[in-house]
Length: 169
Image 1 (cartoon, rainbow, N blue to C red):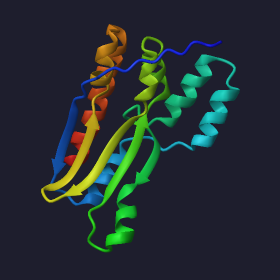
Image 2: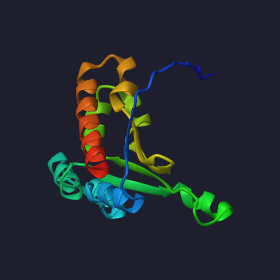
Image 3: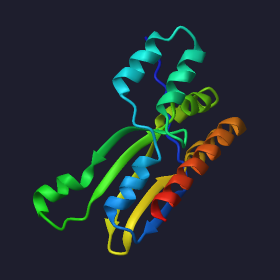
Image 4: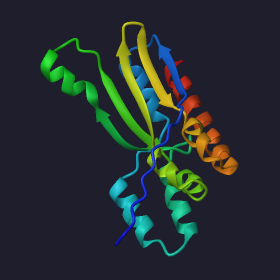
């Protein structure tokens, strides 16, 4: 008979937000321009058929934008609300952004990092402007006790926060 182990823990999460007075479309365009937009099917197939880790690194680095990050998914959350409420509904878009090599470096030291990577960025319209929100990876990983994973996470946080600041400026 298999034994099940169940555990429940609590983590504290730091949320970084920046608000821009620029129009939503400008902020989103700037954010999207700062990351790579690979053909994910081709990237996954390339990684699966790679004969060495050096080949994987080349594929990922070629797919990432200048920031070293890429967009995995884009969910237009506001479109669902717009269908019910109509024109003038505030827009909201959720992005999954990251880098498989960064994720690998965190996973090697903290397997639970896979629950948080790639990261989520939310761009949404609010009464005071366009808000870009991100939950810091280092805050997710702090409880696991790996200094190396935290170092990688802090570097990722700095990259994400830099692109958010640039998009909002």
